Image (cartoon, rainbow, N blue to C red; front, side, top):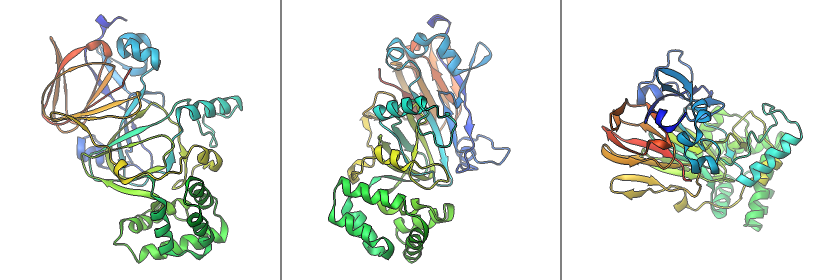
Length: 399
């Protein structure tokens, strides 16, 4: 297939992942996407990931986006993207959290390559519960809030962590708090984090009981209200200490944050657009019944404070267009306001209609998107017109 055979715009049909933490009504409320089964709808995936590949309509036939890419990689992705990545390097989602996701850390590119090779050599099944690395890629992420979006992102400053634990006064872990106070550095925080993760038996039970009792009496504070909320979802989980360790933030609609490799984070509740490198590598650190590989987690975690001014990602403005610049080439993300925009593809793109109808035009070709629909635009498309009644999210990659 050559670029001449490709339409300029392809309507996407996107799979919905039904993870149990997902919202029952967010996709319906925001975008009119039905939920006839009444089950959780956690993530709408836009991309070519093997665990949930979008479909596109080409000459009246429905086919997987991955199949289209395989048939004409240069025309679909662009020569530079094929040379650098070999495949579509990003996955674009609508994420709808009704319950908290696990606390997660994603490895760096080098760590992912080494970990994947090690587990492949050991013959660990990709579907095994103790498999950490599903692919050899890193997984930086950006999330853009569509509703108020509560999350945890990176470690608090060590003095702030100490102040919270000293307020709660948990006698059974007083020695751990004292050790951190005496070693207020990366090694000291790593030791403290490690010891909390491996708490067991009566010591763990006593510490959590004390934390929950204190939290119950301080529900006017976001940190402790979150502890109580998480305890109802994940009773007895060491992840209940996480609001005292990590920065708790609530993004307002239209705000964004970037989550780099090796940074602990968790999404608590809310709906947002999320774009990430095309990876499924997750190391968990609590708020989950799934496998936690403490040693591997610690190897992949930078125990450094994330300053307040680095939690939110401010856009670079081009007129009224918001460009969210990230330090990786795997994805780009911009939000365009209502109006007419002249655009040119630098790579394959996915456009998502956030607020209203969108019309894409190039010569005699056009495609209409309703709110909640998306279009795949091959790299070969080149220049085109975007006419939008509301905001449009534009995802692509650098080459």
